[in-house]
Length: 244
Image (cartoon, rainbow, N blue to C red; front, side, top):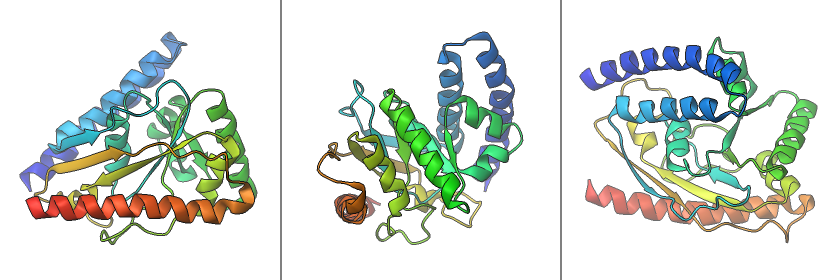
């Protein structure tokens, strides 16, 4: 309980600080470096305030070309911890449009270059995919959560939404699977108290080319990607739970 209280109090104060500082930084530094600094600062604060030990295998991620990172999703911690693990690439996020409407946080969301998706409006969602694909082709990597939302069961990955998979096919860039294990145990969906577990593992797999697939083959690509990620996730989970 003490750990949970410390996390929420300290992280709330950090979030307020970043939400005030980032717009000022954006106005003073048009290069965007200060915005990226504060975004990463906020993500690292989430790790430090929660006292999570982050163990990564991401040294080999591509940094000389834009890619799409595809990560599994079980907890609110997935966003900040994945950004810390992928610090070398510092990708933007595709996230639900409601985040953009949050006071203060929504403005910082936009300043970092994240892309909002209105899932209730198919036409608007497709437009968001086109915007994201253009941004990726111009050089900015993006991270997506193909499961669409946080999963409540952690034995295996959920089904992938083909809508997000279409982004990779539209952009025509490699997709890098990212496996996150442990966040769902620390702070699962529907709970606010942190569990005693502290270790989170993030592993980036080898890039997968999208050149051989068309938009009509999005279901085939989605199934292949899920099989690759699910196999690695289940092996990681089995290994790490033996160590607990």
